[in-house]
Image 1 (cartoon, rainbow, N blue to C red):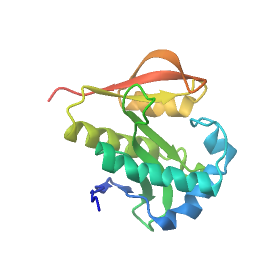
Image 2: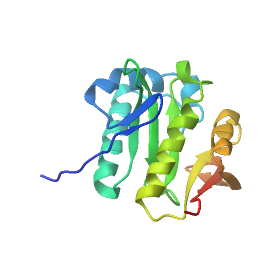
Image 3: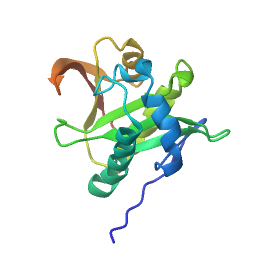
Image 4: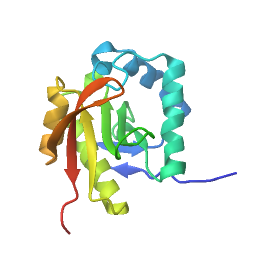
Length: 174
């Protein structure tokens, strides 16, 4: 049996941790919301079975790559907020700092806080000079998140049949 560790990262208001079976209901409800999902890779809502596969893929990425997506929860009350971390399927050009929060948590700075923590964790542990965030051109809120973190838009490109802006997070000199 292979074993691997998924670290927990804590910020002022959030905890990034491994997905648990108990996350399925909240994560499924989040991914059943068209407002949440319109900017995601599939651009559509997901069934609970698809969300379960997403959770499994997130966990497996940690074993295969040493990084992956976390479940994100509020520290006060352990309420599921969404997912954040490093997304890197085989057809991605480089690791992506990705995030998706449930609708009740928008507009509170939580995406910026969680994304900063994921980016900093990645750069502290891997010798990458950069990572990306792939954002649909009409997702203005997501662009504001990465702009606050200092990412720059390099170009627009096509990924899995949709147009995305290719935002780059550069490692800051030590």
